[in-house]
Length: 253
Image (cartoon, rainbow, N blue to C red; front, side):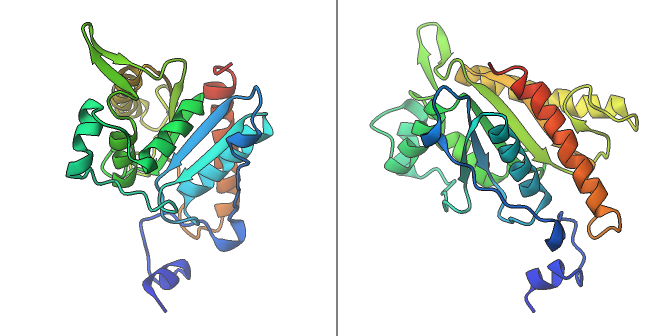
């Protein structure tokens, strides 16, 4: 057996989240092509494992938004084999907007331009986007596309759009959501961390001319292979839907 097979069989312990096989869901969104007068959500996902809890949150969110009349486009960065490395020949396009975008970046920029909201989804490693997502942000949201440096300073170009993040973690154990969404275990520490994320989220959104719609940070993951996993998973899916309604459906009109 490979290491992955042993981990999935619960023969080797791992700190990474694993949804048991019989509880996994998959979902293929219909994309933007069917959208007419609909809100459009672009999911940019950096998670190599389709059986992870992070991907379960993504599938839950995509299904829920489409069920509520939104159009959803998925960009799975691992399936796309997206190259997060900023190569020397791309540097001056990304940094200064010089020359034209490489075709693979122009494709992503086209989708960002169509979207009303961009949703980044990834597991929390070191309190920052995982490298494949960070590379996407650096290269796709380039100068001349996402912002420009004019006489009045930096100006965001992606106006009337929203930024949102879905992030699965498991460090604090303190809440599900964003600022003010602690669950009474250590709300002060929870809000300290969430406010730190909010500073970065607000700054990034403003840099691009967008509005920060918040985050859904899940810090209450079910323990791998626990006897009550099904109930915990269903509860988590319901909580995510409640937050998507509060943060997106009730806000993005």
